[in-house]
Image (cartoon, rainbow, N blue to C red; front, side, top):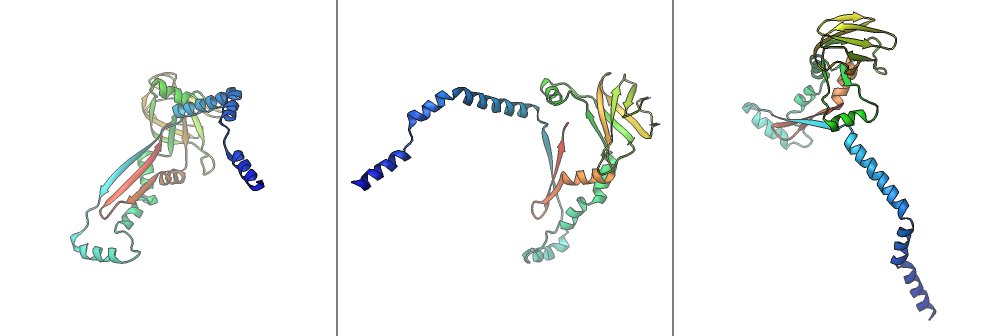
Length: 236
């Protein structure tokens, strides 16, 4: 009798008391609803105002030489053999190629519109506000190194003039004119912005620009004759 009593008691302890569980939910309903609502609002705000990340893909077909077809087939049968396109992939990811890309696209210069702190960028995206655009033909800001990226503020005065504001200096210049003042060299080639628009302009070293491009650029061998090129860009 004693063993039967102990067994039934242990089964009762393992059973879930639904009425008690429902009662706990009812007693703490305000706390549960408040916490759930808070995290729901946080998730919605993050989804709406977070900066989107876009990825661009490209597929390249590589034509092989017919004379090397037999050697290629033999090399593929060998264990631990590297893909035939390994040297070309390494060349695409080399600093020589990426460095020329940095120079051609002027990736050392970085331009971001000035928004209201925290929520300004997301609000502009939700309301469909079109950001102004600048194209910098030449830019140099003294003091740039691997640990420090100098930043200036550019204020659009009208369709012909702009103002540069630094930590302890400011000057005005014309769009399309090479200007050298306070160690800053700047030439704004094109502008598509209205008076009053503000931008942040920063300048990084060539080495850092190449390293950043390497971090967001990848080339993968997708088979015998295809490459998949991926590049990730952050939109501000």
